[in-house]
Length: 428
Figure 1 (tube, rainbow, N blue to C red):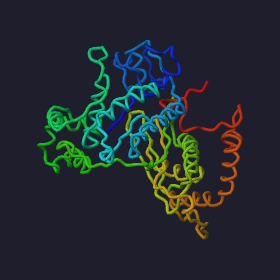
Figure 2 (tube, rainbow, N blue to C red):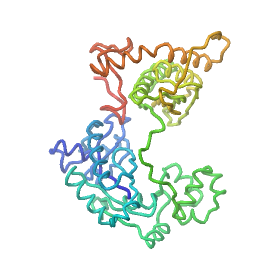
Figure 3 (cartoon, rainbow, N blue to C red):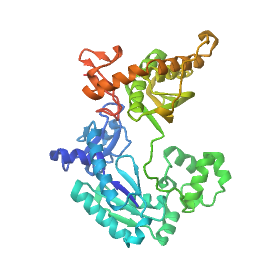
Figure 4 (spheres, helix red, strand yellow):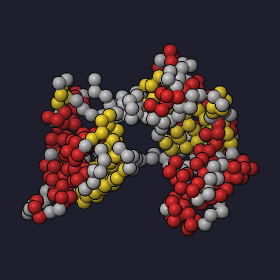
């Protein structure tokens, strides 16, 4: 089963402010580089959709009400959503805040009828959360996901057409979809991959089924080729993964004004590193791999990664690696987006470290020097990190901060999720 809440962020905003009901509403960044994260069906009638630049959405719908987003509210509703799913089965896998895969096979012994269970689930979500959702039922994740999309309302010629609510994919419907669906309907096929496939004359799933996997791999890579070939045959062996753990923690930011030069990038990376470090410590984890991603004004991107022999959760330790990585990036254009990610996690208690001595900084490469600085910071400032975290947990995040976090209004802590999560933040 795949359950997908309808226009989730926008729907929550309408619930909290009934005056928005019936109006075109979007949640996203309101500035020139902002994007739409969620759009109400009233907005979709004008062609507004998720991932669309906000400036484009405003041109299509001048009356569009763009709200900045409140993740605390969305997370609260998501927890209630998961509680409802849990009452049906504990074997479910969340995808973000508003989607869930659930494995119903264990319910056979209870004589639970999947379609009836899906209908009852939709009713309960509507009555208790006042949210709408689409539910898809299929023999694997591929068909369940396709079915939930078909179950939802859609806009046809500017008019909203109700969906079925629940769609079950029979063997006959499977065969029909594999014959008539475009490749872009498949899981993981974004615009770039779809464009590559269409250049090869592969616009439909039925076309993919006729192509040798090896031939496909030379154009989209072996991993994607294997996935697409399996999907074209209706095969999907992915299991529902309960208690899914994130494989990385990161912070991405699109800037209102593009950054120029490595100094501006490094300054921004320090703030990103602080956010990532706090997130790691809140989960009692350290990370061995640090990655930076730079997107230029021409929309090209580059990434650099460094894997350490030890784990880090100190913001200056992370920033030292990020700075070294940024130093290896050729800045051929101004930078519109910067991301700092941490991965390769260890439990904090398993991170056995000690200071190393006898190394001359000048004898090491730039990255080697950065690793030495990172190690020294990680080991030498553990007590300080613990003390700061204790104060912040007791008295609030703004109770104590570094000099770089001090502003006219006191300590100003950058947050991973905030009012401008979908575009540049504007300073009043």
